[in-house]
Image (cartoon, rainbow, N blue to C red):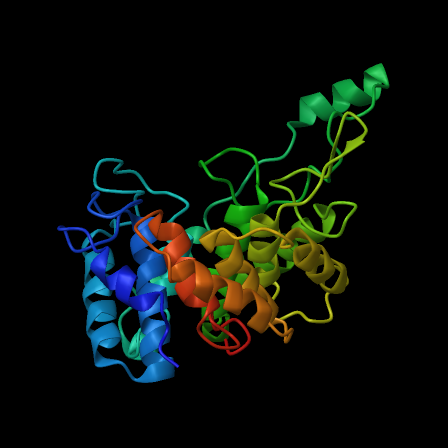
Length: 309
């Protein structure tokens, strides 16, 4: 069956050859990488030459903008290294010649850069002061666990940590130094950050003794990062939280992410995919991020290739 998200994705390409946040805006690394991933996946599933050709061209857009460090900027107008390196590396790992390509064109250089990045927890002096004053913590989490931040040198959040996990797991078979330890700690961070309902909020589980609720988008991304860990203790409850959270949620982004997460964990995603196809029939332009995830949510049982890594 043809993927109904692919034609509008191809049509939404920016004049510079990438994909912007919305059609016709300058290309951005995140949206171009997601489009690249969706096109490579579609080519693998359907043998579409159009998707294969567009995927290779999109990959060229990415490699042309990779920094000497191996990282990627958010876009041409924000030149420093950024969290989008995770998604760009993940996308390039799916290129048909990925394993045989050099480290820059297959994403491995980006994955190596990710291993040099660490999020921060609470500073040591704040923890000492809290103990001295005997005041309860503002938030409930283990401050010693290290994941990845949105901005270098800041707090570790669920989404950038999950994206980094997805990228590093694709390159794990190559024995990249320190990757096993970082993957293991990041998974412990996700375990530590689960909300009472079983899913994930953006980074905390409780603030001022008030339980926080999970979000379908964040929960789906974390579940994708744990796609190779069906035995992980948080997975069954997180899947239940995701299914509950998707009742009545019809955004392209949430439907695509949730369908991809359910398919990755062996749950039946067809009800969500039917809703997604109905939404795509009404597509008149919108956020490219949601459209790319819609394409991935309709693309088989392991769209990000985490189980196959």
